[in-house]
Length: 552
Ligand SMILES: Cc1cc2nc3c(=O)[nH]c(=O)nc-3n(C[C@H](O)[C@H](O)[C@H](O)COP(=O)(O)OP(=O)(O)OC[C@H]3O[C@@H](n4cnc5c(N)ncnc54)[C@H](O)[C@@H]3O)c2cc1C
Image (cartoon, rainbow, N blue to C red; front, side, top):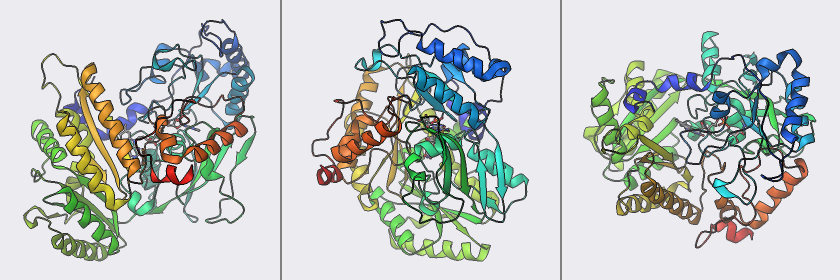
């Protein structure tokens, strides 16, 4: 595994790692077993591959692969805690028609289909399913991974209407690069993990640091999606109009569906104006104080585009990492809970005024004036915000090479989200729990949304510490649900959190979700194992969430 000190300086090269350029593929005979049982030999996957080989014809060598590296990259991510589970074959469609052929082959032969875009999701979203009832150690079901690296075209940028049309393999960073190169005054504001692509972003319904201003992938910025349904039919969910009252919103049925309802092959997005930016960082005696100050800034109507909270453990990690690598000219930050505020406005004067008002508000809310830093140039914006951007790598670097005989650090990034004023309560419980169990979990939160990531860092291969981390993560989810919140603010459910869904949604809502799945995908080929818990595996918190109590 790479050194996190090295990664610290290379945040933006990660996208390039995930988005590999198209390469030659080879197809080898498969040794797949039956789709219904591990023991009964079946030719389902071979028949499906044979269909696909016929469909792709001359293109099979580039559009189908069983190369070990391709299979491994579609069945394991070091960001996930689940055991690797590889597909049998990877298909690389080049068009919606190709996707229709892949879906038909999968459905006709009862083979699971696993869409894969940037591969940055954190909850084993696209891992191959295992035979039902066999748990994590059961045999992997033969399956087809569908990778969109050959459907990575920006189909249209419509500057006049403020829209872009993209294929699922386009990365959000690539779209912004392209807009910049064209000299556009517009950009795409939702910024999940480096390397994430629109197919996965739409299917997880995630967000990023700008959600407090621009919303999430489930918001108004997604106008419509084109979807290949499990039946093989192709639909576009609605028109390109800014708003539409024509019936229920089917676009949003697919946002957050995690590849379980169909394959998204195109999306029409709204772009937003690129604005003047500035950054303020400031520290507080406690997380409660910082959180109250953040709410006061928001409720004053100040035009912030991000309000991020970093606890003192995270700030310490950032200071240590930057002093070790010497990669930053920034002064060390005060090792106290801190807010990182980003302002965005139509002119430097507007931004300056917002910054002035925010300064007043935070000082009224116990901010330490000696720690206040306000950017006064684009270079300072970059410098101050850089500390926020390197938080994850810094947290991991904190444990790198520190304990003799232990493995490289791995991270488990939690993602609970609660009503904003309840965040301090959650963070207090979490920090006490982490301390009690001797764990290491610096915190970074999108405090403006009530979304908090505790980044549990543990040594690879240390099963005892991993077990303690797992328990702590699960307690955190249950507390969030009891506080009226969710197990996931933006990363999605995948295979990691599906057991918590009933406690959160209630059996009625989960039942409806199952009915919708049954209606759209009666053969159950679309990403089985993601999102919906296998029946009987649901986990109920001691008290359950208020929503579940109300709904059941
Ligand atoms: C360092 C790091 C930081 C991160 N920060 C954030 C953050 O701030 N906010 C946030 O929201 N997330 C964050 N994430 C998580 C991740 O980036 C997001 O979940 C992202 O939206 C996933 O996009 P992807 O292209 O990588 O999807 P993938 O991992 O490829 O897939 C995700 C899901 O989408 C499905 N899918 C993919 N393509 C399609 C398609 N065409 N049709 C139907 N289903 C499809 C897959 O089957 C899977 O279920 C972070 C991850 C990392 C590693």
